[in-house]
Length: 519
Image 1 (cartoon, rainbow, N blue to C red):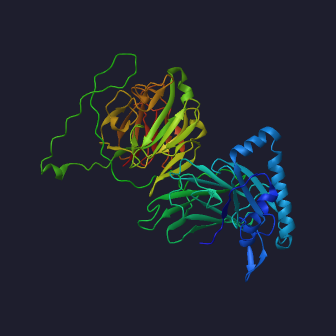
Image 2 (image 1 turned 180 degrees about the vertical axis):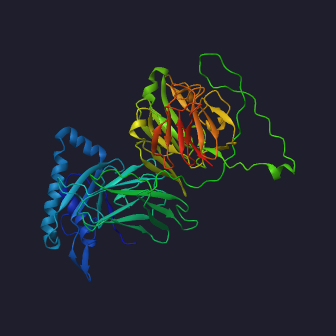
Image 3 (image 1 turned 120 degrees about the vertical axis):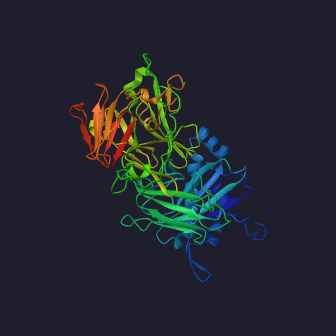
């Protein structure tokens, strides 16, 4: 791989702010002098014909000991740093003026904790660019390991043609946080101007694989050399035009959930009626297992074609429940992206705080997010966060689609009640526990279901026409969403005499739960 970034160290420097001492050694003691900045630029030309240099590099970064730079800022307001950059630029122009090809000479002097006393680190090359004063950004580059936590990598300017990102700034233009591929690998960004999209190339090509994920709006880089550094690892790289509106990374059909394998969920027990005013969920014994059917019964038993699936979780606006002391609601998704308690091993978690702000949490940290958005914490699986309709925005911050939500059969001709105190469909109430909701004092609440879900929310009956819904509590808000999680109507009038009919494939929102009826 060509050397895109030259990185050299000038050692045994008496005065790191002396431009002449850094540029060229005095006298003609050729055999004893140390290679200094002029020699380095002369030995590594930008372009050459045969052995003759035809063009030299013109952008140079100098890293001085951090203590020296701090002292200069304290004592002279940075005057020595500015004088050093200006003096070196003048020497550069004087000695290499015929090799600049019209390029402007620019020097940038910074402090670095890794630079030892009496040393100066020098950085220049094809992928080293210093922006002009007032030059506007063209692109911003961020990186992630899990598509949820994005960390800044660098900026790209209009005239900055080559940028190399990798493990550290000694071997690349910029370091990538969490770089998993080792020192010898890198990602080259090629910018041919504002009218062209950035080209992304991986180096070496036999160790890394790069493809663009159009749905996510980022590049996916994977290590593919068995046994090498970063084998099996992945890195996500997002390149966005500066000033462009944030891209909603959702596919064309945002409400269509990906195919999934069935999940087996243990039904909850029947419980006694609770007369206390605490509105706490009930606990009881497990329902007995059904007796095995006789062989002849299989001929006459109807097929269980109806089912109820927890398709999404409606993340509430906790500001509505401030008087309860609710401070944060946190929901984890496990290794199979099924709902899990936050304390478990979850590749991604979602949190709503008492200011109604949404956050994604992964092993890489925590970052504020907005809906709509899409995340890929695992290969081959994605999680979608949907925005809510304006009519629901007073109650909900977003809808979190569940790729692996639990489901239960819905026997035709049977009317059951869904609610905080009811055993029917209790296996779908995945937030009924103390691990998800935290109080202002830091303690865990009894159950997140107490926020927005009545003890008797609605009753339902599966029919061939659809799910017949009867609203049982005057304070229970119910919303009808279509197959793509778009609002159809708020269910206000749904009595036993005139039940509300929910078509197959559509969703009903009650409390935190978005339930899909399938026939």
